[in-house]
Length: 372
Image (cartoon, rainbow, N blue to C red; front, side, top):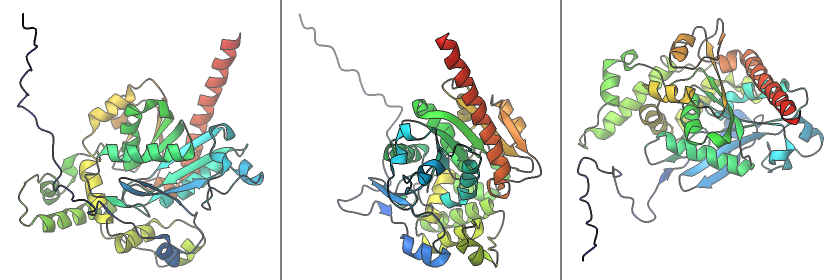
């Protein structure tokens, strides 16, 4: 008796998407980021020195701000290129990973990072920031910047820091990255904080030409390069709200270690050859708009506690929109706009700190109940 099981026919209603071009051996797979030398020549040496991580996708710049307690004890050095012992999971009480938004690199979150550490009386908060692909000193991989390529960045950073989990804090596009990452890797998330999250924009807020360019999936290569350049400029202008204006005193402020976001963006435009392409791909392919379902699923994740902080004057996101998607723990910073991580960093840090303090108190009470 023949017991051979017949092989079912292949389904015909789908196909696996192929890359636009099959890379040849030793062909370029990334657009390299500028080195740190032109950055320091432009801005000075007041900012932290990054660690440079490499992977198949490219190079990621990581800024480690070790706890004040470890610095006092001689274990610091994460900000100067040395991988200090403070990265050990047992050496610090609170481990925080900040994820920046579109346009401005990781250093644009530096004032918030410092404000978070300043609120820690015990001095045991370790904050890490990193440049997303195509920003700051991170390279641009030559593939669509879909959420998973940023998930890989986060996993590499956590592995480098030897952190099994962290408090994730995402701002704007970075909040979208947190929303998607946390659903796929919940065991790495102690808590998730969304600051002015993007991802819920409606395409009706875009110009008609911008919608045409973003939705153009034609396989024709005729005029494609020109349209991609136009799309990138449309997105950059939309994100900036007009033409980028750099303050005249940017150099003096930067050399004091002050974050001047406009100057950082202007430097990226001038020095990073992959910046425009990364910003366009992140906006178009990275869940920067129309992601209501993604946020609904995030709200239902039971593995970690969540907080969203929005600005009263921010057109990108508001409390009512998030509440409608099931995110109930939402704080509002009054009289502030989308850039409140810089314009009201102390206030935002205080809200985050109170949230973490409540979680720690809950953990202590739960531990006491288990021992009784």
